[in-house]
Each structure stands twice: as structure tokens, then as C-alpha cells.
Amino acid sequence: MRSDTERNRRHLIKAAARLFENSPTPVSIAEIAKHAEVSTATAYRHFSSVEEILHAFRAQVGSELRDFSAEQTTRGLVKLEAVSRKWVSLVLEHGGAMAQMRSHRGYLERLRESTGYLVPQAEALAEPLRQTTEELGLGDLGDEALYLWNALFDPRDILDLIKSGRTEEEAATRLVAALRGALVGWAAADRPTSD
Picture 1 (cartoon, helix red, strand yellow):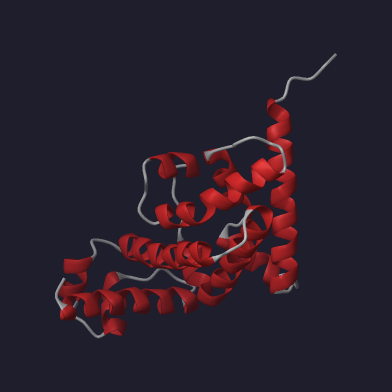
Picture 2: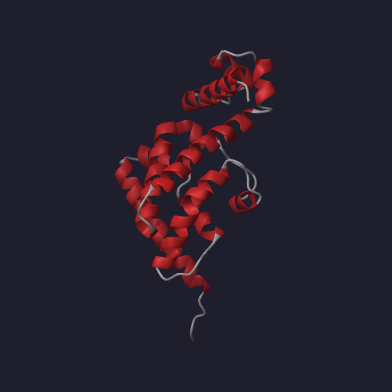
């Protein structure tokens, strides 16, 4: 990609993130283009919709999480906790732009179709989740472990916890503890019960 093309793309993504951080109303491509200091036509050459810009933004954040996960020297629950805490920090750093993404399709469906913005996030979490379930003697829960993580670490709910008075540390600690309980409970539901 040419340097000016890449620069325009980066500017559009940054402008969208800033606008969604502070805007209580929907944002248009024209507004994003104006804030990125490019023409609306240029914006449309890069992205066909506001949703596509948000997907690109979310993929960048997911890539940052994936890189953080790859750098960790720990494993299992300790690594999962570090990666989850990093996610909470990224959500707080990027705020409202992180909470804008909603899909009418379920998480597992999008994950199994390798929806672009979910891939780096899943890559960041797959190994720590697998190691954690192994450490806890639960077996490999596969994509369902990612599903549970996603349900608990939704950016809107993280922001809600912080707005309700929890600190970043408190929110992350409780979410990781809830995830551990959810993983245990999920695995237990697969075990046959004795009468």
C-alpha cells in the first residue's frame, strides 16, 4: 500500500475512534472524513461504511492484545489474567469507540467464520484459555471458552462497571474471578450426574 494511502487509512480510523469516544449520536463517514482531513470520496475508497471503519479499529486493538499475549512468559491462569487485564486497560483507553460494535450475529458464528476483527483477539486468548482449563482439570473447552470470555469482557459492560464506581483493578479482578467460575461451571455441566 502506498504511504499516502496507508496514512489516510490510519487517519480515518483514528478520527472515527475519537468521534465515537465523544459522540452520543451516530457518526457518518462524511464526519469521519472531515475530522481525518480527507475528502468523503477518499474515505469511501478505503471503507464502504462506518461499521467497516470500526471493524478496522477493533482489529487494531485486537492486534495490540495479541502482541501483548505473545510477549508474556507466564502460562495458564496467570497469563489469562494478564491478557484479560490488558483488555480491560485497552477498553478504558479507547472507551466509547470500543462499545460501538454490535452485531445481530452471535459471537461463535462470527468467530467460526473468522470475522476479521475477532481473529487477533481470539489468537491472544486461545492459548491462555486452553492452558487455564487444563490447569483447572476441565479439559479443552475450545471456542466455548472464548465465548465465555467474550460474554464477560464485553467493552460496554466493562465501561459500565467503571462508571458504577469500580476501579480498573477491581473490575479486572472480579471479571477474571467470574471467568474462572464460568469455566468451571461450564465444564461441570458436561459431566454426567449420578443419581
